Length: 609
Ligand SMILES: [Zn+2]
Image (cartoon, rainbow, N blue to C red):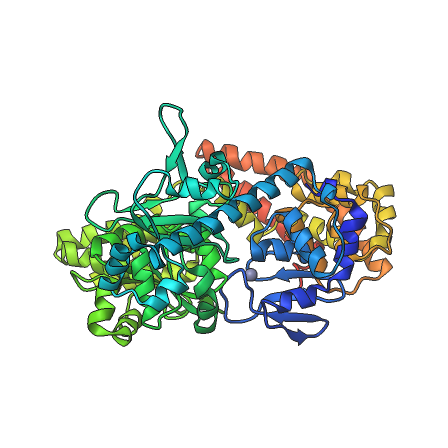
């Protein structure tokens, strides 16, 4: 809760750090006019659309729409809550942030998290010791050797061994004054059913510590040495461990991913270690859970190309079918200008030859062969096409099956150029006409989901929206105009919605005209609304008092016509429902005329940067 930290403290920290310095730790910035630009760390791209304004002390990405002040950047980059980002930046600039500056809840949460990290760190040493020095660690060490895991990897990945018995770890923790309840909270102990205390969750297992982005131990995975089940046992979710957020090995892999621009995604611990040992250090593991939107988002910060590695066709198909829509939502930077290039930033599905897993394949054939296979691995849609063709053949019956199986994945592709490309590809492969495939897609189309509709609105703002955005941009960049906006009750003409709320908060914050822009942005809570303000603040335009006033006049004028437009819209919907074609045509053409008129009156769309 930001409220518990005095505003002047927040402001002091904001002024003590230069956003350019902080961003430069992650992004290589080049000067471009007044701003600095670089490749966005939050989405995959090849041409820089990530801008930092040293004057305004804000950043904004024209590719993925993220933006804000230096706190927003650190929160997003390091996955921190506001209070944590504040502390990190305070520490960095030598500003004393009193503990009581945090709310009691935040203090408690922070302390608990720190405690859990500490317990996991202690556990890691306990497990590592048992693998290295303890007599009971001989069998697991021999097992790892048999699996080809080198001593160096054991050290690098900090592998360990949880000995047999029921309370070895609990006793060890007790000796360090960690109460059993906390060991349970860290996911390392389980309460006895009869309520008489706890026992160790991991027993007689090889232990793989799971580290987060900042190399803190958040959880463990344990593997048995024989064929007993479950083969793998993972820590349950805890306040510091959320499965859908964490990728095994990302902390070690991210530098490599960035320099190579690609990442291998495998399923298990040993697969991952095998890849690293073979020099393929740009690899992470999902640990048996399906790839999530959070995983993809985290990976796009580090690599443009993702290669999903599977040891069977079925696993690949299952995952590709499940992931294809996720990828298009999270990782849609498949386009370069108007050309769609499947071979650029994209997602490949690599299925290993039958009977092989990454570990065995690399041992038998070497890392180069693995890389060659990755090079020629198909993209998601092509993979699904080919595997469907393989299963169903290309008889008439088969073609119908192939096409209908592909309709789902194709519908998930939200980039029209890419979609056209895939439809064409599918048509060529199956000999089914493009038109027929398109018809199939249309029949399949359901009413758009709410968020899809919202996205469309963002890409094509109506004239009113454009006015409102323009005015809020003006409020940010020419705060001298705010008194006039208040006097003329301009906000009363705004549509109810997030933008209006932001504008109201901007006024309510009562910042003096001289207050720095990044301070004024902070009157809106962290999140999409602040990102939108950052975008508007980043726009570079020439503002003169006369132009500002004209803008307000034209806005008020356009709003006067709004009721007419609304009733027209209702009429259109009614005519559609009644299937009254003639009436519908008449109303639509009227709407077109009205739109053309307001287009000529409205300000031009947001200038290109
Ligand atoms: Zn971006």
